[in-house]
Amino acid sequence: MSSAAAVQRVPDDHLSAPSEGCTICGSEAPRRPVLLLQRSPDVALLACGECRALSASRLPDAAFLKQLYAPSEYASDLLSARAAVRSAARHIVRHAPVPRTPGPLRVLDYGGGDGTLSRAYRDALLADGFDRAIELTVVDHFVDERADREIRFLDVTEFAGLDERFDVVLASAVLEHLVDLAWTSRKLLSLCSPGASFYARTPFEAPLAALVPGYRLRWPRHLHDLGPDFWSGFLQTMGFEGRLLRSAPSVVESDFATRPLRTAIARLMKAPASVEAALLPDRVGGEGRLLWRWVGGWEVVLQVDGPRP
Ligand SMILES: [Zn+2]
Image (cartoon, rainbow, N blue to C red):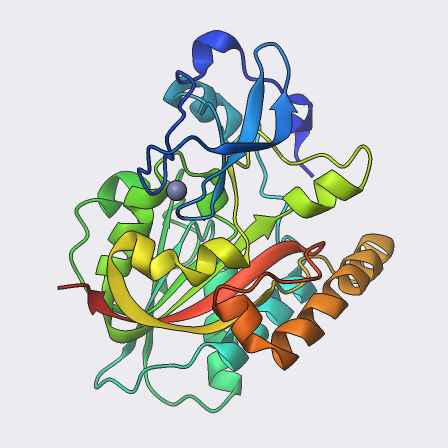
């Protein structure tokens, strides 16, 4: 776990001006306050009626985020156990179809850290009988070039200039950290080859936080809380065409060996929603509201066809 867990409050001079309008879809309609993330200065989680995202009313500035994510302060607390990573990778292979394009399969893992998930994903594909070459590209901060020679690592500063096409794009537990979520999402979608699979996993904790006294959202690490309502309109919000292939409670990120209690609770809380999503796909894929919302995390697989003309 991280040593930076004590950082919970962002001082006023490191916060953006309060914004009524939505920082994701640009809607200027006032957003509805859902939860308070911190006091003095107050920052609330606001719900956008247009794109259905929940986002912080004020966002930390670059200087604050740089300190928050400095390698000495920050160690990713997600998918850190090896068994959980392997299981998550198998899960993605099972649910995200691999497009049948000629040549090597090109995989982009945004926020992929040292390439742990990418490598596990490649191994899971090979174990599943996949017989084409697989090229892995990982984008993240503080890239360590020595981490793995079979993976191409790019620093986020190189990401804006990236102009290639990928068959599979992974954005697992990363979008919630981004001040520029909309820009990054559009960029990731624009890098998809026609028919590519886009996998994303985000926290969907606001319903749990409203229910459980003392439940803490991971502000200021997490700036957004994104559930099925947001994801069902995501492609349209971003101006892309494609299809929602899967929208379901996310794979449990811890494992029984290292965190038995947390894992058991997470699986119990997700189970009713998984059943509901399987039995009533229209409810999560369309306008309907999911009945069981206390799941903590959500995931989607999208087939991306290209920008809307
Ligand atoms: Zn919005």
